Image 1 (tube, rainbow, N blue to C red):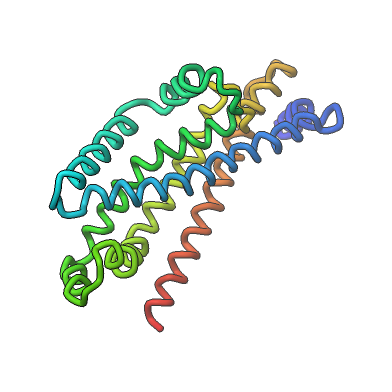
Image 2: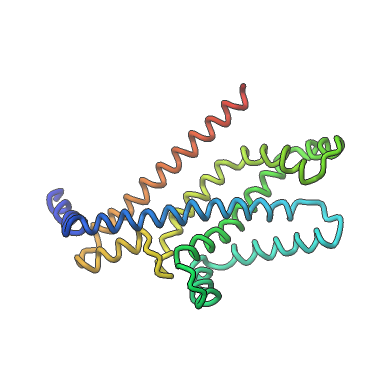
Length: 233
């Protein structure tokens, strides 16, 4: 049985100067570009959305920003990522000439921002409000208090959730092929069209995703441990 599986694997990925394996590597590179790029964008967007939703509603401008942030989160959490990709690529940016990879990074980033904002908002709310009051009483502005006192503590609290968001992004990138992005899933489908053998390539694809997720989980665990150690010194 092992010999038969190996023969099918070799036929799919190691023939023609390892053409199939090279395709997987190239697709994997795009997958990681999308996931990591989207996480960075998501964190940046998420911070602004979270702050806009927790800041005291003292004037009309703040109320408008809070309402806009709520609408943003509702839209991106309430619609499928595939629909968002199709809308951006075939609708809004159809004639822009922007590459599918760039659009994928942007869309996944905007989508992630909605989820990250909820994570950060819960992290901010987990920090004792007395610390915010203490910062304001010392004459610090709200933005300074939030940026230098509250957010650093919140980030430590939400790191595991951010790690889960990265893992979710890695897996969600499997739909990027809907807008012609050559990710690892699309690369696998190309291999299958050449060999007409779906079982082994898809098993290998599942293994690739599993290994990536395990590595990401380990890295997040190491970072968490180091942050805990820094708290004790």
